[in-house]
Image (tube, rainbow, N blue to C red; front, side):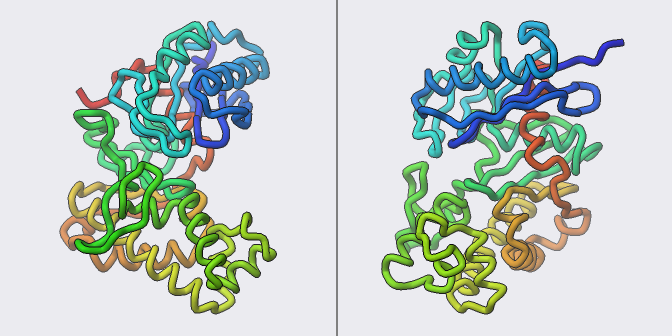
Length: 328
């Protein structure tokens, strides 16, 4: 029997990656990545269609012959309506992405949050395989979570469950940093890679972060989490202070998630978290201290297995299932 081939797309603030996915094994038959030429919604939809057609051609199949199509987008999605309520890295509010993509691709497309898609990919073929109650937390350019309850992807009443990056982490009376979503004091405003880089540039311009700037080759445009990690390893007090702060905020937020949801498995991923071992260690220490002992008893903490492929694999599977894996 010929394998069932599906289209999966990972749509971020900088790139779109489309892949033809074997729905039976999760293996990628082909993949194609393009950088956005414009973040205007219609232009992005056209870019997705271009990447999808290139991936299908590389796999030797017609786009119309694929068994389903799904897109994981870095933003808050309104259930299965295809509307993206808020995508800070794209600068979007209330964008009818599902309709735009259906027009561009000539077929219906399932739209989901990128972390929900990644969680479903890890549950099907990765670190959460066979686990009915799992939480996936990714820390990369942004911060988010994907939730699996009872073996089903949980999206919530409005489709925006799992927005860990937008929980508030600053105490009452403290004006927190502004997040890309427009609100103050969000976890993503501190731990998300884009916001962290912006903060480092502010601090460098004010005369701080000298060792981190040196690790970035003296170029403020290259200030990022990896430069902080290198400065931390070298013993820089500023880098150690920054990781202590962010590690505590991140670990505390994840601990509250574990206490509230009681998952059997916590899957950690994302370039910031997995690429910065000292930040990961500090966050895990706070997770261990703050999660309730009752919830932690059955918890296993593992790293994501599928890497960059989790999002396209999960999106493809959601497209192939036509949304039947979401909560009612």
